[in-house]
Image (cartoon, rainbow, N blue to C red; front, side, top):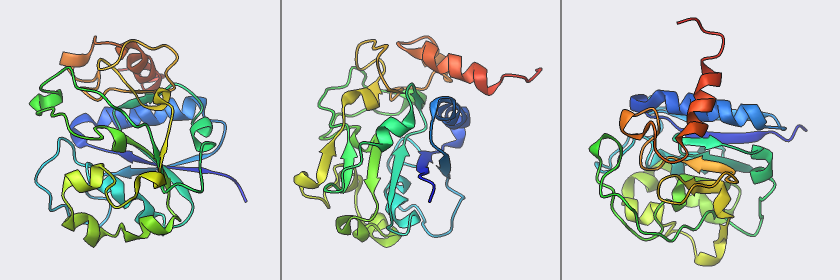
Length: 226
């Protein structure tokens, strides 16, 4: 059986290019087959968004990943506003069967009161933990994550992984979810996360670590004569 990597990726039409750039960055460096599942609003009738908060259109659908996998095997969820700078198979190799999820356990205060498209950027416990998730979809603790359950829970419960005990949350190296602008420049980062704003937005086009995104974007457009 081929060991392929399943990657669910947040998709928001307002920054659709970000999704394509992220996927390109993964493809460029991957040494294992990768299957991408875009978490767009219209891809399935199995979940209707009832939450009224959130700065993007996949803020809650990320928690459907185990359900979409039929609660079997492993998958990675990633926000679309990222660039992968390393082989995604390296992240895949960090699977820990004793954990329900593995995440970068950020502990920081934001530098910006607002982020892209004027969205309020609040501090809260476990901020950005859910922006990159290595999911153990088979873990019994994750089988509670049905569309009905996710619809019924507030964002604070879901993004803090409150259905899990702390010992079921594995800790990944911060290099796998390096927050551009919020953290210092880091050429060693394995995955750069433009959490305040993807460089596709003019306000963030020339911010810290934006060149990595622009370099991959040029690859997306390679061969096109506009």
